[in-house]
Amino acid sequence: MEAVKKHFEDEAKEFDKIILQLIPYYSEMIDGMVSSIPFERSKIINVIDLGCGTGTVSKQIKDSFPFATITCLDLAENMIEMSKLKLADYSGIQYQVGDFRNYKFDDTYDVVVSSLALHHLVTDHDKIEFYQRIYDSLKSNGIFFNADVILGSSEQLQDTYMKKWKSFMKRHVSEEEIEDKWLPQYREEDCPAKLMDQISWLRDIGFTNIDVIWKYYNFAVYGGYRPEIA
Image (cartoon, rainbow, N blue to C red):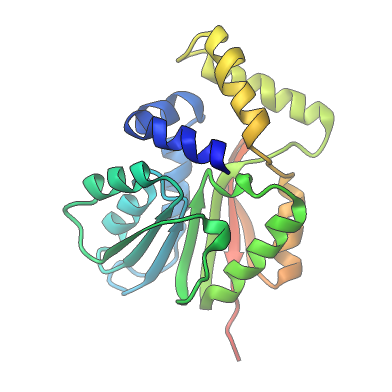
């Protein structure tokens, strides 16, 4: 994760611009995730944003749920500093610099969200174990949503996904930059998993009402609920 930490530290100031250039329909993806949070606007909810980046998701949650308390967690200190700037006008937000893999989940949450972060969990076992920890941290009827890069269910689909992704990126950056910087970084640092595998893992852990809220080829928003705790 040191390489991941370094490039996020380096890119923090440009992150909001970069992400729109590299992630297809990023704003729509995040809007899909936040608008699917099922609570009333007036409800006091406890939220954690894992790998919060510059605070885009947390800001949208606060705009939708003004009484929410949010923990913003990110590996890169520079990202946390950018989050503090973006969220300076909001109350009820705590900031923590740290690796989400080691987060102790000492509190319980109505909502756990993550965007473009959990693919840094290296193995399937790592992902399953972390999803279990998320499940255990949720309150009754709490929800977990993840917006992330995924793999296709077959090599043919994955080839299509990559072609579509590169086609999108070429609208904003040069092919040379894609091939020399962004794709090597993706191959070296990212460990996405097949969407249907992850849906199966969530079901096996005990999540209910599992759904795919939004999808564009190799990017998706998915998650589920923790049922009523007896």
